[in-house]
Length: 202
Image (tube, rainbow, N blue to C red; front, top):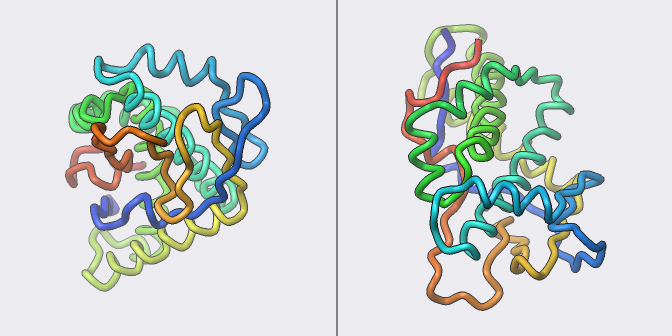
């Protein structure tokens, strides 16, 4: 089985995007042509663990945006992301714990984790030539390739966010609170999950 690479150092800030006002009624954000509606966001927030609503909405929207960017990476590079694998990520205890910390629905965050790990597993197989383990140099190569793919996807997708939910920071590629100094913003990145906690892709 291919060694999975969950790279804590690979931050969401590796992504790039374009901030802009969203005037379409009922829209929380656009990622390329994909529309994330306010209804979808509200439903996801309603199923999230208890926490400050503003923080939960921002983190949930960040997770939904990152998921769409990774979908684009998978599609462009012909990487299969099975429904069973995503379902396994949703049920993983460590992923659910991190979702709770972020105040994000475990199903929403698990979907992001499923895509993230599937893409990294595909890169690990390509870099390792099918071997069961990766050297430190190969792990670094997987990191670099993942960052490149995510950046390329973000470059190809114009990300616009409804200012009601905050401001999309281009450098960090995160929706940040407009004026919420008391809220701690967490990075909704499955790369921060402990190694060995998400099911390996087949």
